[in-house]
Image (cartoon, rainbow, N blue to C red; front, side, top):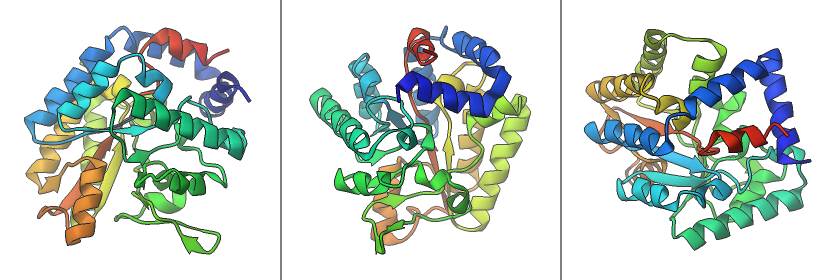
Length: 283
């Protein structure tokens, strides 16, 4: 199945007749240059000593390699988000394997280090976890979005065919930016309150909370105050905001959150840099 058809089916299921309005919203968001979007995020995280993890589609990454290097040099993290933005549940194991390997080779060619993976749409087929392990990823950032994993508060591994797989996962909160902005039409204050509640829950449990905040939305001038409020509030109540790989390394070595009361992971996928590429997914 083509990437475009996969995207259209996914969007139709989630948005129904709102597809047209979603396209208009994304057109408006893409009027902000992606360099500005990333700069807004990096300036905000650096202000509080926080980090951000960006899963990026490999075919998209080739369009702006210097921007990726800027992200790495600012002590943030990049992960693989497939070579193409296609639902793995709709393609064969062989095509998934080819997509993953093409993405890995692309990142190596660009000289961009990576340790983690998130499947496009957070969609995993039955064979996807074993392919992730086979490719040598240290962590996965999408399996934690399933209903049975969202409520966990610590890093975890999954089992398949009677054995525990080697890579680590983390719970991914339901409160993504597209849920709050596109579907629930939250005002800025609504977003701040909702995210603070999640922070308070993680703090009480001395646990981990992770958010999927797409740069195309959260990096907009109108929404960057939400990101700043999240980090500022979380930092003030004892939170640690590392990259995913930093959190895993510290937690495995010391079984704690680097001396902090809880850990908050900020992640956000980059699916495309230009509206024309977003639009191509319609055909």
